[in-house]
Structure formats: C-alpha cells, structure tokens
Length: 222
Length: 210
Ligand SMILES: [Zn+2]
Ligand SMILES: [Zn+2]
Image (cartoon, protein in one colour):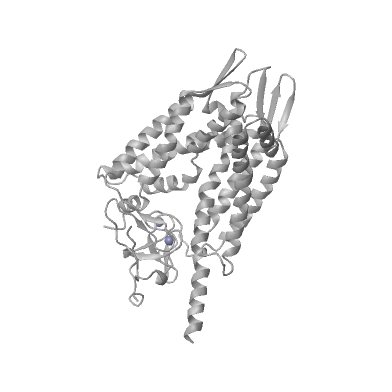
C-alpha cells in the first residue's frame, strides 16, 4: 500500500479546505478555491456542499413517508382456485416462516425491514453527528456511510422478487400472482433513501473533528 | 510544514470522500494508493487493465442483451407451463400507476447496466489503443460514473433465486438459460468495477495537463 502524504504525519493531514483549495469529488483533481466547475471532468465543485444536509433530510422524509404505506398496503396478491390472498411485506414473511421456509422469510425480513430501518437510522445519525462533536470516530462514521451507500441498493431486491413472481405465476385459473400497490411505495422509498445518502457530503464528517482537534490544541498551548 | 509555500493544485490529489489532500505520486502498476485518513481507494493502476475491462464490457453487453430475451425461469403446474424473460418480468407492473415501476425496473436491470457498459467501451477503447480520447468522452465517463449506483443487474440475479424458493410450493420451477447468464454477470460486474481505476481514466482524458 502506498500512501501519498503532504506532511508525513497522519495527524497533520490537511484538507483541501484548510489549504484554500477545493477538490473535485468526481475525479479527485484539486483546484483553487474559487473554481466552480472542474476543468478536467466538468463536475461542479464546491468546497463544502452547503445545501447537503437540507437535501439529505428532504429525501429522508420523503423516503420515510413512502416506507409507511409500503408496509400497510399489500405487496402481493395471490389468487389460487379457492381464494384470493393479499400479503403485506411482514405478513408475507410471517407466512413463509409458518410454511417451512424460515431462510427465505429471514432474507425478506432483513432486506425489506431490517435494512431499510437501519438505513433511516444510520443516515439520520450521520446527518446529526456532523453538526456537533461526536463520540463516534470519523473513521467509524466513514465506514458506516460506505456501508449505507453499498447496502441501500440491495433493498430493491424485494421489488424484483415481486416482478419475477408476478410474471412467472400466471397460470390462468390455476394460480396467479399480481403486484400490490405497496410495491410502488417500496420502490420509491428505496430510491429516496439512496438519494438521501448520496446527498450527504461525507467530507463534513472530518471537518467537525478537525475543528475540535484544532480547538483542543489551541487550548493546551495557551 | 509545507503550507508556507503556495501550493500548485496540479501537483495535488484530493480525497473525494474526506477532503484530505496529498502530493500526487502515482503508484506503480499493481499497487494501490489509499487515503491515509479514511481509506478511500484513490489510485489503483493495473497494467493491461484497459484491455481486460474492454473484454469484460463486451462480454457483459452480450450477456445483458441475451439475458433479457431468453427465459430465466420456467414454471410448470398441472401440465401448464410458463417461461418468462426479464422484459416480461419488468412489464408485469403494467396496471395503471405501476407502469412507472415497469419502466424503472427495466431501466435498473437492463438499460442502465447496458448503457454503462457502452459508455465505458466508448471512453476506454481509444485510450487503450493510444488514440486521442473520443468526442465527448469526458461527459460520457461522467454519466457512466453517475449511473453506477443505479445499475442493479446483480441484485436482480439474487432476486431470481429468492423468487424461485418462494414459488416452489406453488409449482415446479426451473432455471432458464438467462438465469445462468445473470449469475455470471454478477461476477463480471464486480470484476470490472475492481479493475477500473477511475483516476487513471480521468488522467488520460485530461486535456488540461500535458
Ligand atoms: Zn473533476
Ligand atoms: Zn480520505
């Protein structure tokens, strides 16, 4: 592993902001602070995205608002010879558990309940943590952010499963599965939470920390 | 400290994730430069990576197209059978408002992955063969990068497996050829992503530097 460092010591790492510069988040090119558009890749550059938290919360709220109907309305409607059955996400998982597929029930519960809820909590925590000194180290929070970004997409799996099942099980009178209205809300919820995570400016995680260290250093000197 | 001398931004590289700034020292092929503060992978050049990515991209393009027309699951119950392709799966959301979902599903599992592959071929082929970058290559690569989180072909593959288990008690289900194509796709997509050093691509497209 090669590390390129400006000043050798890990603790002395300077951010572009400290140096009066700005980094392009798309291509890592460094520019003078007044630059607005990266001349290499054309991406808009900003030292810190000042509207970041507003957008994070706006998408967070939208995502959360969609997640509630996603759990109340039926995700799947199963029609067999004898009956029509409508299942919500949790209802469907409970049913699967009773009919002997606890493994699949667990996958569904983790993908559609545990991960989305954990993701809402993680994004809220990150957004709050950058506004004040946090006990959780920036390193841990960065890992949390990376996990949220990586795993959020996987919540889409439930929508794909609904699509696959509904197209597959169309055996006329024998059995048919149709998607329920919850699928739309669930998909919207996943998309909004992904946008919320993307709106978060992860550089802020390190700023508060750097300010706190500076402040602390100043105190000990005097 | 080096901060007294005015810094030339051309000799620096910044971490997109945490804003740490380093003097640029491109690592040798096969080595990786990580951000010392947050661990972000800054530069990871690989010899012959360009050619490998082109081959992978071509394979992915062929697989995505083939996988979207061939059936990926076949169901049979009481003498009836039904095979579905991915396009059919996307089109089940065709009732009223769910049409939006049909379009989104088709985009996420077919069109966006395909578009990303085509964009990276367009950008990388001239670079690999030492030609000047293609017209609009910068825009093309930027779009490809922006679409990265929205390319969900590999998630769909896992979705197939889950759906299979869920319907086995209703009827007999068999994997079709497209399922295996998608399974291979999962690995290829991951491989392509690790081979690609974004910084190297941007650097080779850079017209502001000599
Ligand atoms: Zn740039
Ligand atoms: Zn970093």
